[in-house]
Amino acid sequence: MHEPAAFTETVAKLEYDTGRRLSGPYRLACLRAFEQNERGFRACVDAALRRGRENKVGLLVRMVRDGDWNVAPPPPAPAPAPAPAPVNQSGCTHEACAGLAECRYE
Ligand SMILES: [Zn+2]
Image (cartoon, rainbow, N blue to C red; front, side):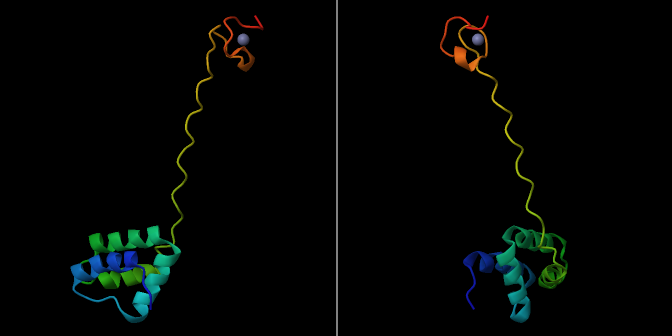
């Protein structure tokens, strides 16, 4: 079974910390979760590392089974504030006056 290195590295942290292998169908379930939502899966691994006591691998497996990885992506960053209207040399903001020393409408 081909595993992306990023997946192997992510679960290796947990395996090392726990001293257990993530294996068999559990590993496959985790890989599926990773493939579908890498960010969500990583969040589960981090949570397992933080919260797990004896068996962090078991905690991860439970979170993956419960679909905890299937989280929505973060909301898009707010749009940047609109740039202030350019002020022309004439002091107005008419586009047609750009570069003119005087406003053509005043
Ligand atoms: Zn103007």
